[in-house]
Length: 128
Ligand SMILES: [Fe+2]
Ligand SMILES: [Fe+2]
Image (tube, rainbow, N blue to C red):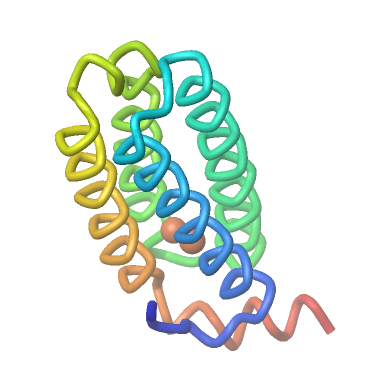
């Protein structure tokens, strides 16, 4: 279970992204081939990228003073995931790829908690 930040559109994205990463880790553990892992990894990357873009738009619209630090965390996670191609995951072996993806999921859960909570009232005000 991951923490909720109190913004429903972001919280539902977070649940979905964590479930997608978990599915990818399970597929790797079950021995899925490089092609399948590549498709699934690209799908996670594209969902993560659009989620981050949505979150960054919200922080920018709310003129959040701490947004640049948070945006940098997004970039780092996207880079990490981009390096996990299907071929790379297959090379790591089922258990290795699974553990690496679980570590990424754990860091995403941490990143979620680092959302600038004081920005939330401003974001909710804009959305009304
Ligand atoms: Fe974020
Ligand atoms: Fe997020």
